[in-house]
Length: 300
Image (cartoon, rainbow, N blue to C red; front, side):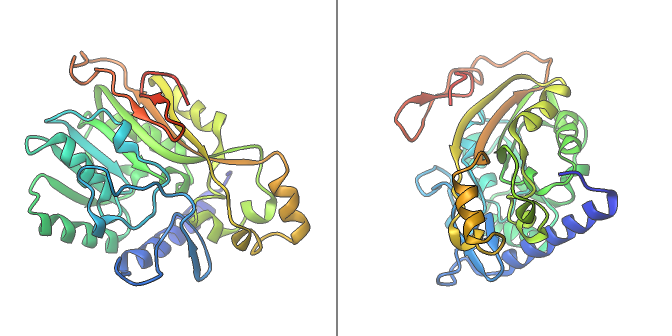
């Protein structure tokens, strides 16, 4: 999405307000399951993956805002420093903390103050003293150069107008030889104008998504190595949401046309450094169809 500076700032403020409100909601409120994709007063869980069987999972920290399980593919080793971009209530941070252990460190970055407060409260309840949450914009991370062994993010970069800037920040803050695993929403083809131009649909992750080849192009242009799509799945937007933007005829054309919306989990490594033999052991994960899929397999 091409935006001038003013429009980009307006979109970021829309996202901030929406996710601040979600952060203020109670996760125990009946029938209020949050999701990355929503419209108006109705919220649908159409993108999120099931975390409930993942070690380190914390139900109170799971707001249903993700579109993948990046920490499962992130090859986190004991003692690593991990950064989570758009950390929300802390779910991926706590899963990462299980992998990095007491000798590692996890830093969550989010620009919604209510999310930071909720995440810090969750960390305090669990007694974690090596998980911290910093208020900040992931386009200008409050993290020094060469700080992280691993960076993860779950359905967040599609909310950011300047995706190239975020990947530049990822490159800056990773240690030489460090790597990222990021789940995000990308497109094949183009969205209808009514969806692409709507600010609420942007805050719902969809209209902020860009074409997959453009997304991967930003990563490769910065010099990341071993860029791999670790997992990919189609996203089906319910008719109830599409009806807010499209006529019945347009909905049918959209559903049977060229555009495709996908969740992908992408791996990339910053050049340099000596990879630890343990870190680079092949770590396979099972995809939905039962086939083995790992960060270096080139599958999916």
